[in-house]
Length: 631
Image (cartoon, rainbow, N blue to C red; front, top):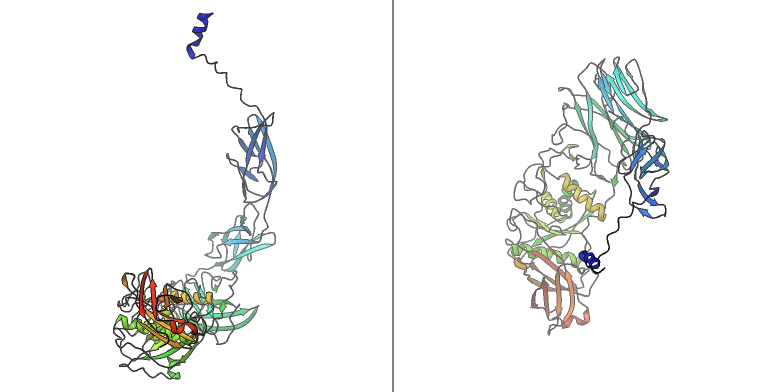
């Protein structure tokens, strides 16, 4: 017995490992995620839970998925169910010797339309063309539904059950695809001619438009219908085009015009190829639709008689959107100094100075006012410092006036720091010559427009100076040449505005409902402390001028990156106010080195006598200088 005990201890005396239990016997497969009904085109992920006779969950065996009617629905090896066509089937899964199944009904979603391609077809006698049709639901196509094919005149063209059209005789007819009561038709022309006329595009334009016709119209601005005809063969001209504007089924405007020589291809940047039809002033375009047709009397033999309309005969025109925007407000300030007299600006001259703005910017009106002159305290106009100081003084003047208009300082016709004008970008003040194009250019900076590349130093990434897509000039009732140059460039030539710039301003106006400058006022104050200066290179800041404003009609809102504090003699803060800073647009590569700030700080009357110092700070840099609000 002792020997047996010792001999048995060779493995440390452990109990032998029992054999593994037999695999669990699957009693049931439970199909999960199977819907009773599903629409054609939908898919669902199915899953299975395997249980033993005791109800315990066990590992799934290898599963085999099937659908008894694969034309109705199919299931992938991973259990992904795809509905193919309307009908009924049984979804079945087998594994571990067990099978489970679930009935499935596939229904067709509601049919709302039939799509048919191509929209038109040009054939010679005996030729064929294949048409394709689909029944559409609100969420896409519905496969498997029967299409019925017919033609309007079988002596011209026939069609088989697969949509294949055969040209029989000369003329034009339609091919129609139908499902139930829903139909769609395409045009078929059978002809031996090579010539064809069509309208590549037609839209309404005011000033500028994009290729996508994404620039909406502004109420009150002159408009024109722009039509781009194209011919298959060169040399055709003098073809009539009929344009029609309709609202609620009633025609509100229609006119026939005659083309010049029609190009054989559409080129967006090519001038002289569009036909312009001015729309009568005062015509309400909002909600109207535009249709056009070339060769409306059918006097020209064509290979395709169905593509003469734009939009195509079977398409629904898109209603026109017209925006109502507030006027732009501009105040003209004659600007001078002790050695540079301010020019004389009359109200009549003021209207002329903003006329080009009114023409090219998205507004029907520019309200202009000539106000009293401003003599700056700095006589060196040919320096960055001088420009910055003048801008600051204009900003302070605007704020003290409590105005929300754009302020344009009108200077005599002598360069200011080697430029004809300067403007804050974006901002509300600018200055320059008494020239309509300069006024529009500098206030364009206030709208946030930069200089384009070309004809001088531009801003990287800005569009090129050339307009590119021809615009519409109501002064000539015709096209702006594609070689026109941007109002924001330094180029010479036919000055206009780019569609990108026009749309940028218009979108700002749509969002804010106005092009008026942001309200600068914090409310009337008995006393205002005017503090102005520059943000210097390297993070520095300056105080260039301080003065007291008695009963200003506006004060600066408490916002911005410059902190202005009014202190007593001991350095105690009496008033604290944030003030915004704004950059000056680069002109001819000679950009002003610093941004400027100008704040009108409301000072409560009781503490005004205690103010002895002013401090400004920016990013931890603080500058302090003596300043008395009340002497």
